[in-house]
Every structure is written in C-alpha cells, then in structure tokens.
Image 1 (cartoon, rainbow, N blue to C red):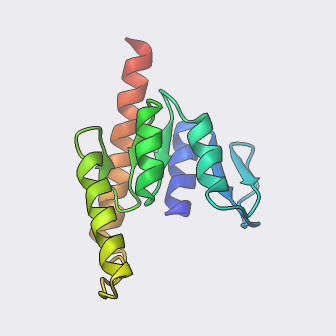
Image 2: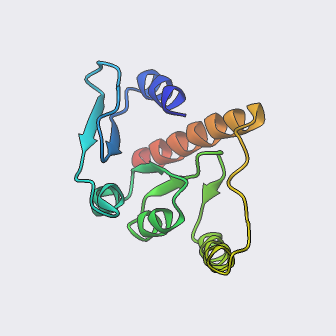
Length: 140
C-alpha cells in the first residue's frame, strides 16, 4: 500500500514517515522520509508509538502497535482499510492472542489473505476519510 499512501500524501501535501529496520526504496520527495531504526525487536513499532498522537494516522497490520497508537490518540488504519478503533481493538488483541496460542499448540492457522482489489479500494477510502476527519477537527 506504500505507493497508494505516497499518492494520497502528494495530493494532500502530507508528511509521511516510512519506518523500517532496513533500507527501503522510498521515492525522492521532501514529504517522504525513510526512518531506519535498529533491528532490535519492536524498534520500528517503538519509534512509531513514541511519536504518534492526535492528528497522526498510523497505518499498520500490527495489532499491538495499533493499540499503542490508539492510546496515544492517533487514527489507525489496517493495511486492508479496516480502521482500528477504541471499540474494536480489544477484540483484535484477543483474537491475536488466541491465534498465537493455537500456533504455539501446533495448530495451523494460516496467514493473512492476499490483498484483493476491494481491499485497496477500502484502504484508499478509509485513508481519505481519516484525513478529512482530522482536517475538520483542526478547523473546528
């Protein structure tokens, strides 16, 4: 979804931080910043969670990062376009824990489904909606 995020950021003139523990190819654009953190466990998540707050949008499939970002006041969107909310994060955390326990017991739970065209559309719609909501809050 990075290319979609870059296009939306360009359209709205937004700053984007791409956070990773290794180098990624990010287009040369003053609004796009690659932040390379150490390869220690959760270093990228920690960098994001420590800086996220009201007016920020965090895009992640990582449920604990979504939880931390929500608690910091950020808007959080999953990579399939489903927003994480304070009302939904508890169930998402519980499901994550359940699947983790099943995997630990040797159950095959499979991975996430591949991205479908409707996921891309839902993602772009959710991102646009989040941007508009934050802009309205800043004006009001």
